[in-house]
Length: 305
Image 1 (cartoon, rainbow, N blue to C red):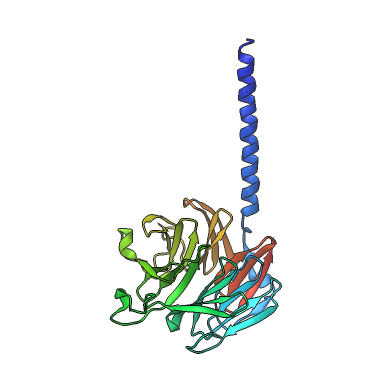
Image 2: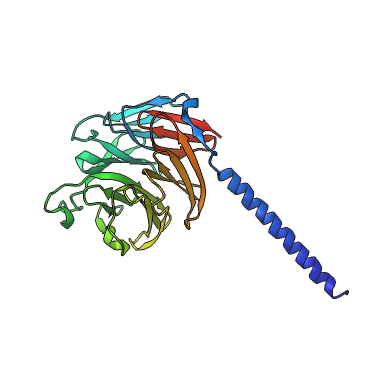
């Protein structure tokens, strides 16, 4: 009996540790949960746009909206106050023709997918043009083989990493393109990489560590690749109808569709589904420490936790 006592104490201690760990997991999970549902009709917009296409937030809490209808990028404070408007219709420097996506990952620059101009422009956080790259050309200025016949491309999504490399979805070839930080073109990921039927209509892109999440609106799915372009798995397989964007939130992957926000664990397990009701379909979302910024085509809302 005496010999069994330490074993019993160790077992009980182990049980306590397991319970404590479980409480930590539950607490973290509860903090990460989306609301059960959101009714945007109960909220007043904090900002309005002509036809918004994307939303992002920098490390200082500034918001950036790509306004497709106005051919502008709009910088805002968290309360919706407009700080600046960049661009306007055109093909020259600091002009846009259908800005479709925006990325402010590293906080020092703003990448803009200038869709109908077929290029990516990058600017400082104050809107000063740093440079641009054409999707139809490599760093040397020669056409990439895939586009040599037409000389056309249409970037619909852009995502960068902390090393200043960036990936782009080209809507015309339905492929993912990759540029290194010295602006040299490296590879193309397309539907053949899946060893499955080709992509339908690629619309959304997220980089997370060594993984790349690619959203396909036609197949209502998100495909996961490594950063070398090797296909790994599918999440939200044919479940994310009306898919528009993909957002990282803590350890969850948020998939924004026309009328819902679905939260998945990175391995593909569904965490929550939040229906969103309103007069317009959802375009994009951005979580903050105090709540959720929710973008529709013409309005930006803030939903407090």
